[in-house]
Image (cartoon, rainbow, N blue to C red; front, side, top):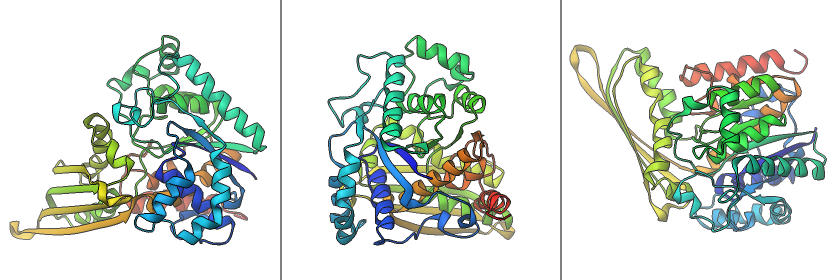
Amino acid sequence: MTVGVWIIGARGNVASVSMTGARAIARGVADTTGMVTAREPVAALDLPAVDDLVFGGHDIRSQRIEETAEEMAGHGGVVAPDTLDAVREDLREIDERVELGTARRCGEAVEGMSSETTGEDVSVADIVEEIRADYAAFADSQGVDRLVVVNAASTEPPIPTPGDYDTLAAFETAVERDDPNLPASALYAYAALLDGHPYVNFTPSTGSSLGGLRELAERNEVPHMGRDGKTGETLMKSALGPMFAGRNLRVLSWEGHNILGNSDGLVLEDDANKAGKIESKGSLLDDILGYETHNAVRIDYTPSLGDWKTAWDHVHFEGFLGTEMKMQFTWEGADSALAAPLVLDLVRLAALADERGEGGTMSHLASFFKSPEGVDRHELSEQFRLLYDYAERHAEGA
């Protein structure tokens, strides 16, 4: 099964490392470390091979995918030079399939990445039609069996009144009226769901989370999932939070300070864009603990770090007889190297769900996201169980 992968933000760090990794695996110069779909029980599913993924995408930047990958190789060794050399021609071919995207309502920080974007003087309806045409042209030219759309673009500011789009009728009326509050991520999602393409939102942006788009996904029987890939500090919270809850140790405060240096860090310097990220990173802890606690998250841009990010967490908790204690830990990782294998996992799992006719929210993928749609439980082990149960039910030969 040949699967087309259309990435929004195709020339960004996460997308470039995802595509570099996929082609390196296909050429036998990299392994599948970090990919959940390469490990049992998920590996037992009849998933499309990584070799069979064909890439294209939208972006507003002119920097080539190969150049982004070179930056990853040159700063911190996220991509080994030999690995990059083995797939350079592949990346150049993919770059020819990248179309100009829209930065509509993505915030000044994102809009500033390019002086030329679709949508500044074009109606919302026309933007949607252009996106649909790009999807269709790619699928036709590459002869793919199905197309999966992945949002890996920089974080948008949150929509001020998401409840205004709770029904498909309301969303479509907003499109017709050229609603200025509709952001790019929702338009990309709408275009995908209209034409039956699975949609994955790896960002904190709106994407397919609006009620009207969820209704469309159900009506058209299209799988979709999001939001915000869970790769670092929040992954740790979802694993450690249940430990405190299970041992009845009361968390008095949990402070998290994050620094990162890539383009995502630059975009998150803007308070409007940062608001969505802070919300997705900080909201799960109270749900896990079962009570409200002081839970602060800070994100700062540190240019010298490049693709690397560091999170320092300070947990102040209370034990027996009111004894106050603390735990501190530091998480340091390469942002794109943590995210890229998950992008490939999600593409493979979304393609399988589409092949099986599983429309609507893919709740079994909750473990991949900070703010998983359709799932209220944030304990990491329980989210893994959703995925493992799905895999055991649908494994080949089961």
